[in-house]
Length: 501
Image (spheres, rainbow, N blue to C red):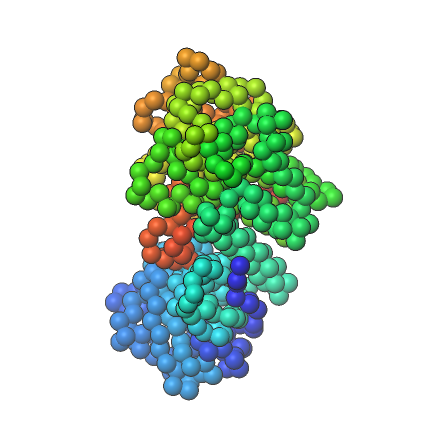
């Protein structure tokens, strides 16, 4: 994990003339035919005798979202280059959203690759968004490249906002950096290829993170899983030579106002098992442990930011492969807690490992339960590749969806229609793992998981099948590959619970 070194500077008017940065970053807004300089750009404009916007327009700049235009300073500033990045259109009051700032900061960070030091005035628009966007935009996963290319910008000085105190600004910088670092923990795990990341090696990495952050960790191996009756995890993992695991990673401060359980799907590679997937795109199934990566990163973040909450992550890990020992369509699994499930499709494996972990999490009597997973292709059909579907207890579901949208991790509340429950009835077992038809597949998966949630427990399932992995080119602060969604949403929910209960 590599994150640029961040520091707070004076505001741009005071600091610009003495900065040691190579590049100054400022924001532009989309105007009528020419860009409009955003907050924090005044001192830079003054150095250009008030003609910076004209110079940018001459170079074709419009201020549209994520547009990057570089202008040499010709000695007008200590820095040699001004990098103007588009924020897009402001609202009727001239304001922009935090997400506009994050995305602009991410685009600027990518353009700063190979730069030693930058000075950013985007922080005068929104400090937290500028820090998060810069850290995440600078990210690249080059662990397996013999020639990694230009390194990310090494250091970024952020201009202090004109409002708030120095103490507030330092706290914001610390929190934003910690959140971005946790997203990057998840991204690194997701991007690690499955020959190096499998249940046991994931557990090893989790143990190192736990030790480094003062967390408690318990690892159940295949023998312990069998002894304790975790039939879902064992069933899915039985086709692989690399056996499954179940992790419990816990942060417990001395005074915890509430207890939050996190559950994340950890299928370190999903071939579909005997119900095998098509070959095209199967390489992307290395990301089927994105939920596990997200909840592990989130409990690490809880420790870093010292939330006044007990946060416990339950992480089921398995590799879903076809073999002579693999579970089959038609098998009946005895799940942890006693319910039985008829397997109609071995590619609907995530809900089986999650069910075991959800029951175990409920035994500890949490106040809330958040589960996240790359659960269904139906999520992508319904909501696309950038919007997560949130299901569960209606009040808690809506709370999470709203907070997810506020962080820029788009989330949308989805129903759990009662008529779909009957479609999960089985002739052999308590329920089947799929409905047998393709209608409402994301919703049916949520209904399946609900069967294993403790009565009365506020809970939510976040389906991140699309948003967890970017198969296209970089955009905003999102690189190709693992995105780290929904770490920032979970962080926002934990902060909200800490504040409001």
